[in-house]
Image (tube, rainbow, N blue to C red; front, top):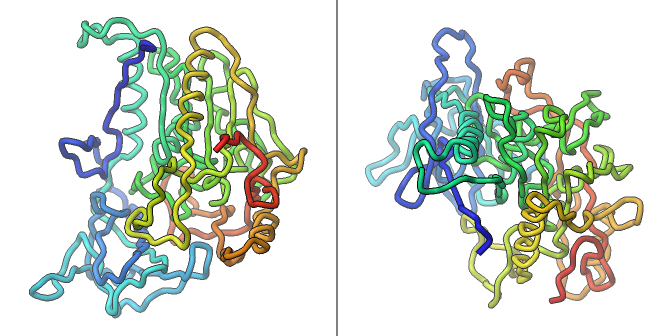
Length: 437
């Protein structure tokens, strides 16, 4: 009805491909000539006891251990994300897996005596034989989109001509679109604009593990390259590192910049990075976006994925059991409206509504403590330990990090500001777009 054609590509190297899952078979880097190729890190976050874990982020292709007997490989454990890490003695774990016939060596698994405990955060740092060029997925996105937009008649004559291209990504793929912008990839090899518009949804202020050595694109929680400054489109100064940068610094001219609508739920704010999209890193001032190109919308009172009715009491992602039942607010109408407004903005130059999100200048962007203090006064509410909430910190990934080679575990320092929407006396958020139900 709207004249849209939907195209999807496989861009992620570590996906197990099937009839319903697309992935990418990328080239691999030849590291044979390097005396120090670097190490990788795999995060392990169990929701139930397990003695064995695949060397991958959740259920993805593993980064195989180069030498299963390497004494320099290290397993760390933390009680929570921002907690102090402790090295587990090497004799207590091995590159192996538990089977019906006993524990056997494995370059694809890690085994821990006594098991990995649910609720704890583990990280194993080791050398790997795998070196897929993860960033080729970003190039694939650029080149396939450019081909469809400008040259599709060469292979797909029945499709007709495409006037515009809009990129849509949710969560991980939303962060991938932000990373795409940061690398300045919205111009193809012929100098033509690739995407006319982008809608990164529930991506927050981060990018991802999409363009460094030994990158696992599925990883989203371990502090690494995807958690680094910058967070805002415009060039700002990091008060902790003195570095100046902006998400769109490499797309400074109007010809290359797409129209962008950032849409987020409350979850991206509470996890520590959402507000950094529209404030300075210290959280002292609102920083405006270029209104001719960008809108930022907060869907008030929502969770990461749209809610549904009836309310479910089933376990969440990867078997996690939440303390409370999931949010039921379905923000789909808002998301559809955002997409239609973006389309009209591109094709008919119809200005969309102004950005709507928590702001410092009107008092609707506040510290998380302020909101939790309200919830503490409500009946039957159990609020989280303030000291264990997720944060984003300035970090040091080593002297070769500018070339995409990290040193782990990541060294973390000062905390960036984390602001969330203020709430009324009933705990409902006051900023952003509030649905009537």
